[in-house]
Image (cartoon, rainbow, N blue to C red; front, side):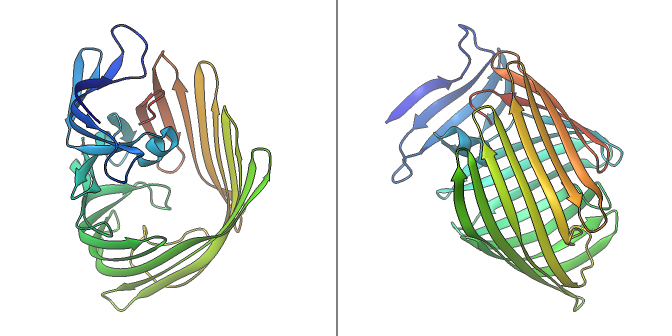
Length: 319
């Protein structure tokens, strides 16, 4: 079925706070019966047109929509390395696959972003400029990919590319093999579930350096209607050396907490990771959203880098 010149919104007002206007909305698409194809779309806040979008697919399932983030409202950040930064992320449809574009501007780094183009369902060509890597010993950390080709099938991936890292000024070609796999998933009763997973990676660099990591994680999840709690404990054995900070597994043993609580007027989100080896808090992110009818403006603070960011959730659509 196809709708033309249609609008989508979860706002129940006669003049909605936001709407997604599209020249064409088609669903289902072949075998992808859980996704809509949206073409000629523009996002409006009130009567103000925020931006237009290339063709993209979006899931009919809210949890999948939130995970995929088909597109997000512009994000504002403030930290000592970039100054003020404004970024926007967009998913687009290309050769029946989904590509990703992130573009932004900062007062200190100027233009920045990341472009992921699907060559095939398994291959992606990636370029980036000043893509920020958060939560490292040196934070914020920026990498540029010139370019990076990635093959991914299921839980396995192979990538090859040239990277430049700032502020370390390190650059090198890298070939990386990675695998992650759930080993056990079990219901514990009620809203509790248990998952045990393993992962490993091996990287080769042009200076004959190599780096490897192998380990796993035990995760306990409690998913309720108004709150979600994930507690995990992990261990990694590492060896070799890498020229990059972003490519280093800085925590060999850790505990992680991800918590989200939705109330009548507020949404709280908390993520924290504890360094078990050195017995100290490694990093934390605290976010608070205020519900304003169908929209929820929020402010976030991250311990590493002292980063403040401002963002907006669209309630019900969760983009």
